[in-house]
Image (tube, rainbow, N blue to C red):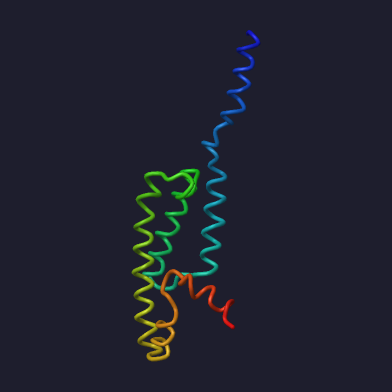
Length: 132
């Protein structure tokens, strides 16, 4: 092998690290850790909760199986599952809002007027720090 061939082989080895494909143990460990973490915060009680949690768990498994996250390495599975999961959670949040409104009435209506449903208002986040 010539010196040029050796240099090229070294360059390829540095440029193209070993593939991470086939790290199934890591996929299983990451999936289990994230699913248990999510379960600790939102333990499902009703059938609807279990369906939502199941969809969320499937989404996590798909993310780790595809060895990347939606924003870093979008894959067909994650791109298909993301809008489905967002839709499910928006519907669930709206249902829970109706339930809270029925249970707490005017108190919840007042809270809902001053609190955004999904994303914080950028101006409101900084207003409390800059009030005189």
